[in-house]
Image (tube, rainbow, N blue to C red; front, side, top):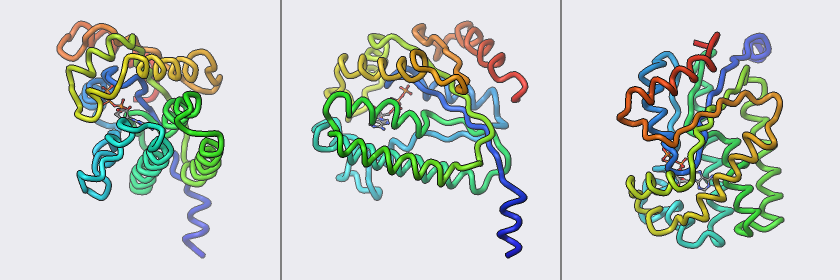
Length: 236
Ligand SMILES: Nc1ncnc2c1ncn2[C@@H]1O[C@H](COP(=O)(O)OP(=O)(O)OP(=O)(O)O)[C@@H](O)[C@H]1O
């Protein structure tokens, strides 16, 4: 009974910041730099390694299966990506007090980018997408409910040609022979639709151009962090 009352009086509210952008846009690099600049934030990386080894078994590589046969595996991939992200969010929100959580991509991106792209391009059929959406809408409300005070998005906007070069340079096994320029263009279009064309008025989005190489370029990093600092003003 006491616990139940406490629950109503004390709702922990978090601020969520996600870094969004195409495959190979440089999100992980930006996240590492932000980790150094804002050590007070809690960092949530993307659970890619869990998708590469279900139950820690490298033979069960869902990401690889998805790229090998997207029609067969798109729905499973979306289910599992959603489940694994949600699990991580739930875990961190349970042990953190009012915090700023910075993540690589978001649960929303799974739906707005990858699930929608799969549906638009016939990798998931109407029934699969409808089931995914029902599942998504209900569970997101259950898990996040009133726990979100604010949500900010940093969109690393990069030309798909540049993403292709960076992706090939990084050379992740599952991606190197499977991701085409066309796929990167589709994923780019989904980002533009979500974050620019149909932008929700309540959504706070910083559009950061990441075409220029910034990993080892301090001047370029300064240009980006001037914009990020301004966007975060009052927050940190
Ligand atoms: N919901 C999803 N459905 C299908 N594939 C996904 C989903 N989320 C992420 N991925 C895939 O997982 C891999 C890693 O994703 P992501 O683009 O977020 O990171 P990254 O490539 O390491 O980014 P960056 O190079 O910008 O650091 C990519 O192959 C991406 O397409």
